[in-house]
Amino acid sequence: MASVKVEAVVREQNRMGECPVWEAKSGHLVYVDINAQKVCRWNSLSGEVQSVKLDARVGSVGLREAGGYVVALGTSLGFLDWDTGSVATVARLETDKPNNRFNDGKVDPAGRFVAGTMPEALRPGVWERRQGALYTLFADGSVVRQLDQLDISNGLDWSPDHRTFFHIDSLTYSVRAFGYDLQTGRMADRRPVYRLEEEEGMPDGMCVDAEGKLWVACIDGGRVIRVDPETGTRLRTVKLPTPRVTSCCFGGPDHRDLFVTSASDGLGPDELRAQPQAGHIFKITGLGVKGVPQCAFAG
Image (cartoon, rainbow, N blue to C red; front, side):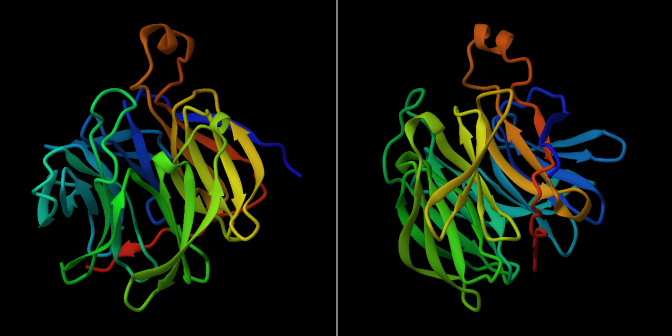
């Protein structure tokens, strides 16, 4: 078995790197820096990083069949034209909750964009509870609210057979599963999958591998963990050289590399000096598993 290797591939101090998406046809890793209000794109061949600055915090990004990207920014969903940097707003939501914003999102296997909201912190590490929700954006531009009363809607993905939806509500330290109707996008029959121990950190972003196991990024835990959703057991821990690990996705040749984002915001001056790789994006190789190609929004 190959030895596991962790290397920083994007050596930039992202404030809140999140939501990595592998764009296989171009060899780009697309991701967001929430607090810098940017969508970024790393060219895996040249090493160049490009970015587009937006006018609100951007929680997540997804591929789009028509070109460009689908984005969740502020409390809006829209389409980003990469060449012009402009966003065409499709839906404005939660206008009655000025302290809320969109957070993590992902395109489902039927080409719908699923993204959730959360409140901004009242002070560091303190959030108003049960203010978030989870929405589905359909190809025709309509939006359906799927879940509500969430704390911090976060990591999400689907089982390889598309029948199960996995979701993290960060403040509960839990990963949950729902039955998923791929025809309608509806979620039902919630069940617990895994609850993180405090020393593992708080669960943040997440992705599924081709074997149906979950990879969970643990913010302030400095690690990603692999979880078996059937048994609720942790199978593996991979530690990273910075504590604020935020999200992950598979990419690279045959989707065998795990890309992991991180954050520098939330660390004090002394911690930043001690953690020079805070905010970098890492590539983990030698895991012996591969991921599932990312889906593109159908609209």
